[in-house]
Length: 361
Length: 255
Image 1: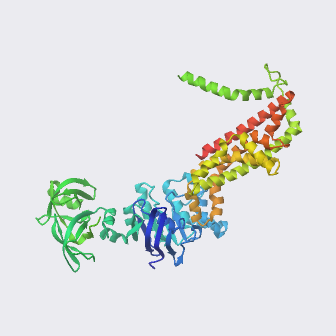
Image 2: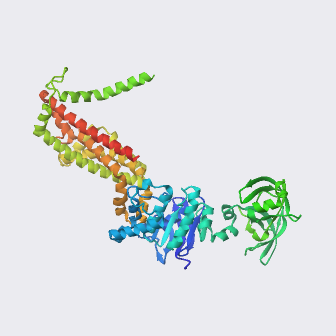
């Protein structure tokens, strides 16, 4: 598995004064499921269309499988795209849509039919070949778009928010299917989404983008557990950010004074801090524990919400600038019974699962 | 209030269609005079029209002009519509406006201007000069029909085709053209009708090979040929109406 099957070098794209993509460098491994995650307007779709050759970068270089494709037009690139709008040709039958890209291969009628049928089978739409696209549901259109792009056996499949138009249940089953198909065909998938949950579920690696820049590029677990900045921490999942001041640093650890939790020792995560630095202690809602002794911090419960598997609490207390979100598994909450039902609850944070971020902006 | 509105609508349609109904009625009237009461029913004006050599030659002139104009106007209208909907360029809105300007010019002015140019340059007058004149007034209509079609056509279809390996020209024939087809047929019918019925430019530019409307005009000098003109007019009215209805149907279907 080479890590630089696709490599983007200093990619910039500007539309007049607007910078859509700002100096992006990325490497994507062969056969991986790679996601570009970010809010709308962050440049992820522009990056994808440049990979597909439907847009040219203003500057920078794109290499796919060792070949510089920067100025190669889309119709000669080893990439295919699944459009957000699906773009299923309304004047062609389902089979003619799926077989659209095969024309240049000069296949016999029988061979053409065999390839189309095999693709329809892959996306579980056997026997739909003669139908008109207008008879298809959104989920079926999505599969046809996928089959049409995969039939030409691209080296890279580009997917532009392909699931965003589907309802939640269908989207979840399509996510599983998409991952299964990717494993089966072994093609490199580059997937654009604004849905962090979708990105975390599907990807081998995720690049988080904002304002045309890549903020962090790493596997999903690292993204969740070790965000590199406040922006990433807040975009992916829920995160409590507690301000604090660095007291001292020793190898691998950093001591931080917080107005509410007092002095605690955190893993430094390879970062260097100086005494007096203002930092943020980033901690996920599930990384708190309910304390039975007096070691924890007693906080006032201002809101509680039941999510089936979990209970969410919004809590305030002295020295807390913003309310703290604490998530407790329902079973644990039941075990604590009365403590959870009262107005006050004592919580402890787990320093090992916190990340210390520089306080900027 | 309801009655007033109904009354207004009825007056409107009567004023609009009564002359046409009268033309058709008198074309079947067995008399040279256009006067009530109607006499017996006859088809002899239609027979006479069928046997009139000048009329047949004018008809064939009109057909040649209208068919050529329809094809050329639709082709250039399509190119203009694709340019203004598919590309963002400096002066795009100016181009869009200038495409419609010929519609606002009085045809007489256009006619005089074209006549002067053709005489000045020594091109002379022929069917070709009528076609050029008609292109001026038909292209804006074609553009109008096609721009709405292309506006409603997502560029993603063309992008998808190119992404699947088809170069721009192949993409045009496999995707753009079939998807624009209802608009193209609608434009062909509309521009054909406009060119076929057009009088002023044809009058200025046709010289000794008159089109059907010019021929009809010339026949008005002979009172006894009036019923023959009426018969001809009836045929033109009916054929034009059918074409317009088909064209409208196609346009509403695409919406």
